[in-house]
Amino acid sequence: METGVRESREFIIRRAREDDIYQVIEVNMASLPERYWFGFYLTLLRNWGEAFLVAEADGRVVGYAMSRVEETRDPVLLGLKSELEPASRPPESRGLLSKIAGGLYGFLASSRPVGHLVSIAVMPAYRRRGIGKALLSETIRVMRDVYKVDAIYLEVRVSNKPAISLYEKLGFRKVRIAHAYYADGEDAYIMVKRLREEAGALEGSEGEATT
Image (cartoon, rainbow, N blue to C red):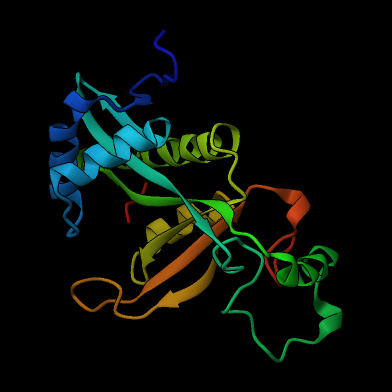
């Protein structure tokens, strides 16, 4: 089996290759209103190839997830703070990990690596087969095990309830609203999943979709 390949009965998840990009563009155009130029895909593939994944079924690319690694001091993107947490919530209701996280804000003297899921999509005819979940799960694994990031974040339309539900099932939390983020003026939720437990958790947290 090719390194980096994960199989199911109906599809495989593998690393993308340069000759996949045109098919990835087809998936993007059939699935999302957001568009990217060829060079953008190529840059992500060449710089963060382990995190550029495709889903293959019936001999063709039917889904993809592409990500990059960034550096940030932003505690929201690092999953250490939520701007959506009610300010009036009593301190005693916060969990121990949240208190630890709060104490870390002042210690972020240097930036930390964070994964950014730039885009994920599945062809309409191939949705509801677990492909989106498989792509996202493998992205999380790669970001944790290969790129060693502290957290992974993504943007999702506030109206995209199926995608939000999937992300929440895999441990992402809404932490910020990006107003008029999309070209049509719709807001986006910023959602984050912590990947390094020792650095704390979101304030107030216990414990097939496309963007």
